[in-house]
Image (cartoon, rainbow, N blue to C red; front, top):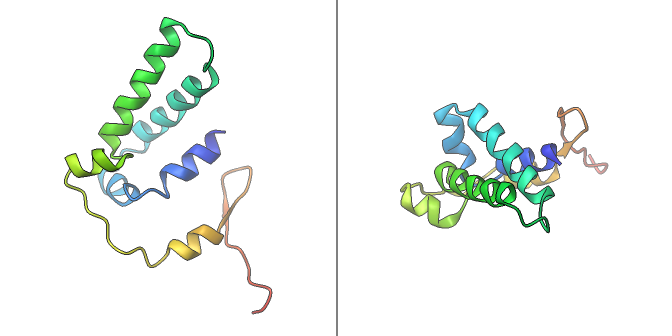
Length: 104
């Protein structure tokens, strides 16, 4: 689950800004907190409520929602590598392997 969430974060429009800010540990914290909150869904407790709240706050601070990007004045440009990233395969250990077009 962490790899999927981590991969998603680095595919968002905010990823370019997050890289510039060099805040990988904060992004990692967001990933772990959001997964913990998702795993507790259905268990209405103060702990789950706090995790959801913390995840939402981090989403806003990291620019992971459209409204957060507007608030941060972050603009997106056309991503020339989006097709490449969409075809990219993420393997279990987190190493990235580019997909190979068999027609080539």
